Length: 361
Figure: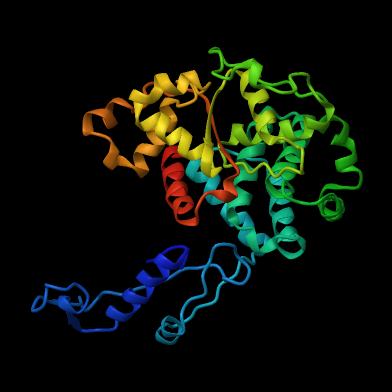
């Protein structure tokens, strides 16, 4: 099964090849690999080839499947439509799997909200049971306390972060009105002041590797409170976070400030081409580090996590002993920030997503 389908032209070529050979009884390997003529491969009679893919017209980074693939395929169209009963089943399955409990009324609210958003959310094509399960875990701790105010606050935070995080102010206002059909009038107004109030960040025992001199605006800014609350909430759920900034918003400074104040380490992987080259040379060619120090690029910048990440992509530059020596020891809270994520080449993003998924599990 080729999950995610055609992400980039390389994967489209692989899909075309697999669709072709999956219909053959067998083929001469020399047809595809020069010098291997005469080696005949037979297809196993039970072999089947499948492709799953979101529609290329609505989903970023998805290539349209070729006519040859479409003609050779039996197409089964699915969608993300759920009934409230379906949503309840998904919630129940997750609760049983993780051995946690959730009040029936709260389950009903989450199920109804998710189904409502599948119909009315501006980005409804991107919604899936994933958001529903994230919301379940976001409110579960507060639900255990039995405190109604804490539960409402957790539910508000879950909606603002998981479902509404990428909406424009107009879209947010519209969706809040829709959600109050389930939650009751005035729900969001009740929590608005707290959501934008000063954030009380957790503090970890170890000090951060962030240099306080690198923080441009160390003072707490009221304009950043909602974003920092969303950031902290997302980190507590261990989910990927995309900081979408307006010009001058300086998301990097916000992340630096949060990491410094909480005591988390911060590793920045620069997506800007020139910065990437500088960090790459600094991290892989360690004999140059003294020279880089003279230009203000310290060893701390080429951190162990950066060397580990580049080792995945450029392992040919490292010996086995060097690679093993770079593996990070005892785990600790860490933020990995990708500066200008949209500049990372598409094929590298696919590999990067795979690595991050493995690291988070």
